[in-house]
Image (cartoon, rainbow, N blue to C red; front, side):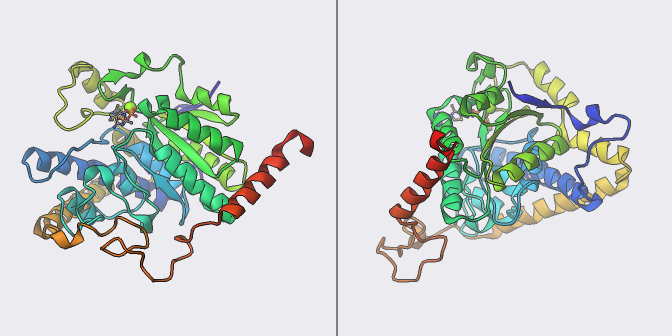
Amino acid sequence: MATLIQPASDTAASTGPERHGLSDARLLELYRTMLRIRRFEERVKELFLEARLYGSVHLYIGEEAVATGACAALEEGDVISSTHRGHGHCIAKGLELAPMMAELMGKVSGYNHGKGGSMHIASLDHGMLGANGIVAAGIPISTGAAMGFWVRGSQEVALCFFGDGGANHGAFHEGINLAAVLKLPVVFVCENNQYAQYHALQQDLPIENVADRGAAYGIPGVVVDGSDVLAVYGAVKTAVDRARSGAGPSLIEAKTYRFEGHFLGDPEPYRTKEEVAQARASRDPIVRFSAALQQMGISGVERLQEIDDAVRADVETAVEFGESSPEPGPEILLTDIYSGADADGRESSGEKTEAEQVVPRDRVTEVASREVRAQGPQAG
Ligand SMILES: Cc1ncc(C[n+]2csc(CCOP(=O)(O)OP(=O)(O)O)c2C)c(N)n1
Ligand SMILES: [Mg+2]
C-alpha cells in the first residue's frame, strides 16, 4: 500500500506548516510561481475566448501546487517531461512568460518559433523536454533521459509529470518497470486530478490509489495532498534525493483537482457545477498557501498583494510581447526537425555537444549487464 503523506497544516497544527528547511525567500518564490501559473492561464483563457490565440488549450488552474512543489525539489541540470496540460510545468521549471505566450500565439519569438503551441512547448535549455499531446508519452521520455544520465554516470535526475488517465496506458507499466529494474534516477509524479478527459477516475481504476501500483515494481508509492505545495515539495524532495543517490525511482501520486474543463470549450457534462464550486471554495492551492504564509508569519496580505500585482504586470508584458511579434515565415518550416541537421535535413558538419553525442551501444550493454549482474541472486 502507498504511504500517505498528510497535508502539512494537519500534521503540524500547533507549530504551523512544515517548511522543509525552505527559507522565507524561497517560500515566497513558491507563492509567486503558483501565481505566475494562475494569472498566465487566466489571461490565456481570455485571449482564447477572444480568438487572439490558437489551437487547443488545456488549463492547469487548481493544480498549481503540484508543478510548483515538484520542480522546487529539482536542481540545475535536472529535467522534466510534461503532458498536454503543460503550462504549469513550464513556468515552474523556469521558462519565461513572454516566449511562452508568443508560442501559444504561434509567433516566431515563441520557444519553438510558434510551431509547438500550447501542447508542444519544449525548452532544452531549461531542462524542459516537452509538453506532449500523447497521453503517458512522457513516461518513456523521462525514463530514457534518466537512462542517459545513468549510462554517463552523471548526477542528474529526470522527473515525469503524467495524469491519472496516463497511469492506465501501457507506457506507464513499461517505463516504470524498466526504470525500477535498472534503478534509474527518475521520479514519476502522477497528477491525479480525478478525471481523465470526460470521465471520472473511479471508472478506470480498480484500486484506491495509483501510487499503490508502485508495489508491483518494488518502488516506493506515495500519496500526497496535491493542493498543498509544501507537502508536494517534501514528498518529491525525498524521491529526488533517493533517485540521485542511486536507489532508483519512486511513484508519487498528488491528489488534486482541475477547476476548468478538460480543454477550453469543454461543456463538462460529466460533473456538476456544484462539485466544481465546492472544490474551488475548499481546495484552492493558492488560497491555502497564502493562509499558510500568513500563519507562519512570513508575509502579510499587503506583501502577497504586491507579488500578485507584479505577476499580473509580467503577464501583460508577455501578452504585448506575443502580440507585437511577427508570424513565422516559410523559411523555418524545415528547421528544428532533425537533431544535428540543417534546414534541408542534411547532416550538419558541426561538432556535436556532449549531450548530443549518441552513447555507443556497447557502452549501454556493458553498463546494463554490470548493473543487472550486481542486483542478481549471484551477487548475494
Ligand atoms: C495515447 C492517447 N490516447 C488518448 C488521447 C486522448 N486524450 C487526451 S487527454 C486524455 C485524458 C488524459 O487524462 P489524464 O492523464 O488524467 O490527464 P488530465 O487531462 O486529467 O490532466 C485523453 C484520453 C491522447 N491524447 N493520447
Ligand atoms: Mg486526470
